[in-house]
Image (cartoon, rainbow, N blue to C red):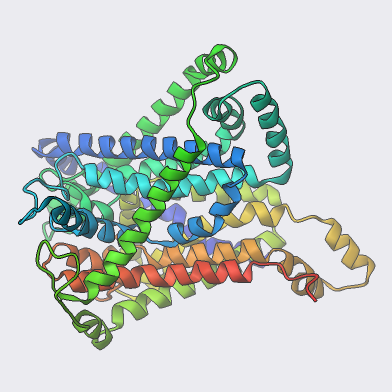
Length: 536
């Protein structure tokens, strides 16, 4: 079938990438150099600390917010703001957040006005040695992702009605909002949270671009240490970097396994709590709303400060408003739009190809084969991007595609298709077959059925998958930096490079540009996804 040939665009490269990832594991000199590195133990500890704390914080916040808002009937209102917050690339948020919290940032300026400070505080709020700034940014970003997962889990109509009935009964028995969340809601959606939690933990513990902007430097996280070695001009450092990337993947895999085992072991205690624990310990709905609004406000403030700083030519402390504003940074980007054009072309082409390939697969291949693609997609996304990016680089180097448009496209297409398949397969496969039977009874052909009935009814998931695909391809950093090999520039490469320099307006302008197209894509997806059947 043609779809099998199309899906090979994803399956074969992904399998080869997973194979190439372990090549550096056979380099004994790389492992010896890694274990001899004086920063290795602390870097590994930092990765585990930042990843686990950020994941735990995101899980706690998302459960409390989703549980309280589901019970109050307000959970569905999160759809639009969540879409916008998910569309905001991690790197753009990290840059805005760093400008917001740095010692001379907007928050410090507001406090200086209130308390009469004449100079910025002496303590470090960015690149702090414990990675606290990185943890806060990761927790805020991943809370949005987990909230999206929870909102999807609660939105299935049969489950929603069932849980609403159980919630009403529990409220009549005097159970608090927190008790209902832990006893009724969490056990019924927990299975759907496990894989997203693994992805969040792996991403948080192995992120490269956000760590470059916010994370500690001496020592860096293990991902930062590996990234520095991978980009080194010395071969021995490259081998050490590959070993570090593989070590990070192995440690994170073991950590995820231990967490899963611990959760299984805690199940009896959880059941005892469900039947005998206190029922009146409360987490008020207004506090959940306050937490949600605080996260949303942080995103809005980060975007606003990017826009302001991109025009700020002179902004001395402690003034809240820049003294001199101009468009120099934007004029520089306008004079050299290569990075923006490259990112847009990659985002649009990967989303379009991914959508065509996946729809062809879902239309022509039996559902029983979906599990193969799903497992491969989860494996691809569940591994550190540093490791999969290195595997992509090794594969494309062997094919002669490094520093070429073809290689850059393939490197962006693989994670894009993985994300899109996870999002699209479920809604597409659950399409009611009675619509097809009705169209057959009316003598409608297959093409008519698809164009007039099925795809219009599936417009929302198709548009959402395309928007996510665009955002994923648009914001890739690790594979882009490796495969581009200095020949191509994207917005993410420029933003990370500028984050270590002193041109703050130009950095803010690039980060703001990194934010706008994904936001526009999600806005268009939301508009296109609205059903108009029955309208006059």
